[in-house]
Length: 70
Length: 188
Image (tube, rainbow over all chains, first blue to last red; front, side, top):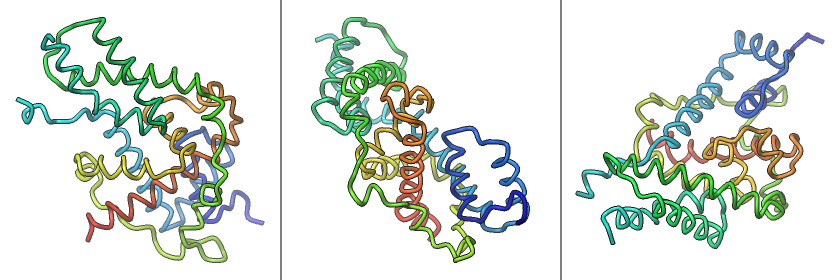
């Protein structure tokens, strides 16, 4: 058994969970090790970060229809 | 009506869109918007532009919406029990038997440019509105009301495990919906 080994499926679940809760030490370490060796999971992580960013912009967006209203 | 009153009343539909998305109940949403408008009319003030006015109104609306969620917490904390809502959305992503991605996750392109457009926001709202009702409420409590997981659990008397399961499902469904309706199109 490899210590802190996680499959991509498990890592995807950790990356989703990270949006809503603090990760434990074991998950953080496992994530770091996995991300250094994996091609696919960093791409999934980028998707999650893009979503986070998009949601933040949506939340702060109030509409730019000022000129159209005049 | 004064100019201020007219401006407020003209923004009711704008407010209603958010209230509906968050509360997933038309009657509660209309009440929250009415209370917001009344509260705003009671405190007339001037704003440099319409988007400052909108920001102020949305701030009031968020308080009214939290009140509504608190008031209806029994209905809100009931979790969706349809088979669809119970499904594990990680299963929508193909993994091999050994747990590796069967296909590389798609490159969503240059997100900074793509995610700030009004079209993107419309698709995001459409995707959020397609979430099962209680998943959608919990998700927007995090993302629109910006409540912490602890606050949501306390308000709705949910266990953290229940909340995390719902948020996990909601995020993965949203990811899938955005990929199908936005990022695929954008990169095509």
